Length: 595
Image 1 (tube, one colour):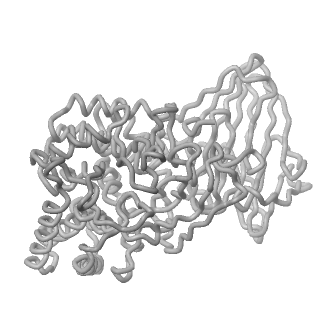
Image 2: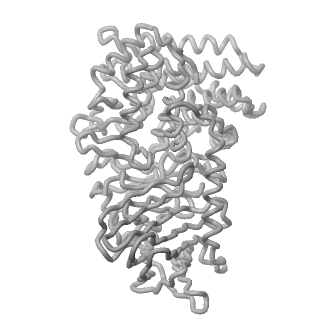
Image 3: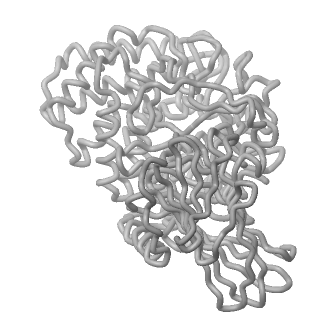
């Protein structure tokens, strides 16, 4: 099964991945970063999945989201009949609920439902009990976790797996629901499946109607906005980088990371996308999460946090899961939390500046926090760090990290000037100029006519595409033009953009087979449009849209050899970058700037 064969459903607290054949193969419950109950995505059915299978062989399978929603409809065709499966996770329910509605629209279909729950990341078999006198309810318990299965067709426990075999004729309808609870709680009431489905559909329709995106790319933008909202924790405001873990950057490789957390680097990109499409409440929710997460001593700013703002995300390997297409090791947690990445200061200060410009004004206490970040940055900006791509072979003087250190000071100055915030303006102006001159002197290679990945290196890096986007240099500066040309000549693969070519011992070295990074390709769309190369920008954007799967989702990367999506899926940064590139294309602008 390829990654693009999956669709996502979610409830604002977690998300599930549903295959083209209507098997739910991934679900962490009750939160994005919780233990899994379905982990077949990283193993096989014995690691947990919920299958709805027809007895007769399938002739075809197709699916689509209901317009403007995250409700997926999968149509399974056999020679004997047609089954339509409607899947969603309920919004604003007292407890997390997953719904599956089945409708036979033609002929006769014999169906088997198997709910193979495996806790403890795919290995713990729950105690499965049919609850007598409760209309065929099934309860699955393992330690603190408890799932309740209800349906219009009763399921019987066999080998600790609830199973139901039934026949449907044209016009027949059935539904199942799975409710997540704690084992110490009383049994939750059976969900009103029809009402909850209708309420969830209406929620998404109402939410989608708020989008202000217009123009030829409005539909693609809306699908990406829905994806972004689905990756947002409605309780905390944090946004998961992806709902999955350990989907490899290249099948068979060890570049497998857990992305079920919130990266500060995505802050400004996300803020711009949400504000640019009219979602001010969502932007404010994200801004508030950001402020809470970074609250504390500036020296202890982290690269990433859990969605509730927790700081401990210890990385460990899971030896009993073989990995997607046998790509081991499977990792949970992320060791990047221990890294130093100076670029996050720029992304945080830029996001807070954008929120002020949009009228989402943080209070004076937040400004005090920002001043503290600049004071600390002044002490550490010259130090090497681990960079935007989180390489694991030691710190370096990464050019983009220094650029974003300048962005941090520049945006703090802008906030001070435009919104009357008290600040040592002369001191900050001197600091911004000092950082800028350092980057221009040490990050730019006169022989290559390009900014390079790190000081003294000849390696190129696609992050340098953002130099004009963040306003470090104007788009018509010859050093920007040279950098774009060098990236076009050396970091393009099958018309798409690589992050870099090779860091020894790291993913991206020649032996590791670095794959095109989709966000970087959207950045190139943005830059080409700023350069006035509108036709090239539009053509690349259309190419990127064609890489989405059949329901409009993107992963982290694209494997040009196997012609498939790779990396964690769906990837928030890819969809945020799609939104921002589309807004740039449709706005008919050709200028640099912070937004």
